[in-house]
Amino acid sequence: MTTWLRTVLLGAAGGGLAHWAGFPSDWLLGAMLAVAGAVLLGVNVALPRWLLPLIQACLGVAVGLRLDLHLPGPSSLLISVAGLLLCLATQLPLGQYLLCRLGWSRQEAAMGSSPGALSVMAALATQLDNPIRVILSQTVRVIALVGSVSVAMVLEWVPLAPVPAELTLSAPASLALVVLAWGGGHLLEWLRVPASHILSGVLVAGICAAWLGEPVLPVGGLIPASMVLLGALVGSRLRPLPAREMAALLAAGLLVSLSSSLVSLLWAWLAAWWLDLPVFQVWLAYAPGAVEAMIYLALVTGLEPSWVIFHHVLRIILLGVIAGWLMRRAGMAAPGTDSR
Image 1 (cartoon, rainbow, N blue to C red):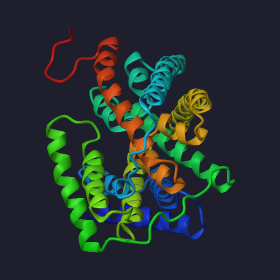
Image 2: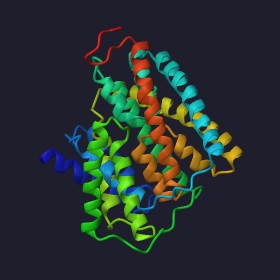
Image 3: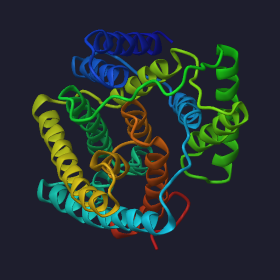
Image 4: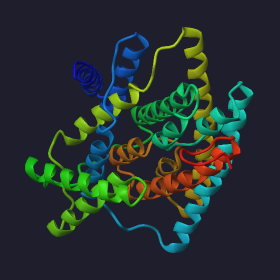
């Protein structure tokens, strides 16, 4: 409990400082950097993994209360999905090639090159003798992406979203939605539905918004608290290593993050040009980051969170299917199966 409390306080301090400084993505990025910095200094930090479903439920509720189902027509959506598939088909082999050139094993490169789905790849990486490379590569990618978007917002390349509604739910109503989303998420998880708690939150809150007849906001403080916990959880995944080895792993993670981001930007630009959409909106949908972080960024920039969540859930499904192929290709066997 002492370690958990220390981690939360560090995350809250980092997020609060970033918020006070007026930095975009403040609570998320500030908490991540503060906790990651504490790890590198040798401070013992950790948060329980059972917090992640609760965070996802909160984020799903925030999206659902602002849900806009006016997605493009079938032909436009098909073009966008085709762009996502081409993006994945380019990112995976490129990232794996770069990591293998840096001396990573085939197994490590197969997991580390996955563009997103951090929790899925981290779980697969536990089958390796030392999963630190995979986990660090995926974590650095999330931090780098959130940082890049924040810089773009500081430079005013992307406008911040106006407050979408005056109506704010009470604390009991907001917490009731989160509890319903959390319970529904467990049911969807049992049914093996990807991003189950986020989808449950979107569904529950969307029904609430439809019943009220207008977009609403959750109680003040719900989203900042969720982002502090998410940032602290991501930052605490790092583990101190010898300086030289840590620098090499950070460089590898940044290299894969940069290559994946540039690839996604290329395909996003092509899709956005064809569909006449904002490039940044399509890039958030294609970006190789954690779904929670990308949806949050879509919320604060006002760039169609429903569009972003659709593409990221689809990508999680695809990566979940591809994971089995990646494991076979890398010579790994799933738990409970033989090597064939």
